[in-house]
Length: 102
Image 1 (cartoon, one colour):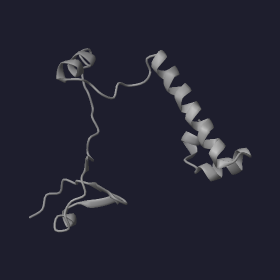
Image 2: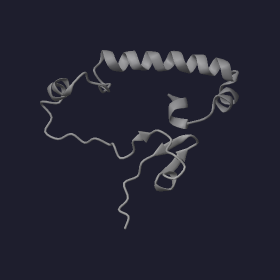
Image 3: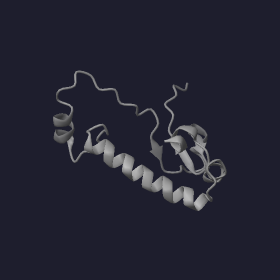
Image 4: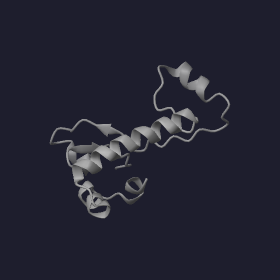
């Protein structure tokens, strides 16, 4: 949990805990699997994919309001001419930004 909250690299987590970075990575992977299983078992983890629209509607049929954060959508790297209209968020990752341009 500390590693998820702190956002430290494996090297810094190793320094804090006294382990090497490869051990930290292994322990973190195991911890995340245990956390995911515990959340699924107690129905606290949200469903992330649906087979079709009907399954989506059935899953949310008791909800009055659904808020979806989909403001950024990954797109393939555009050709050089089109890059100026998109913003490079991370190296090799482009995000389409909806901007009213005149």
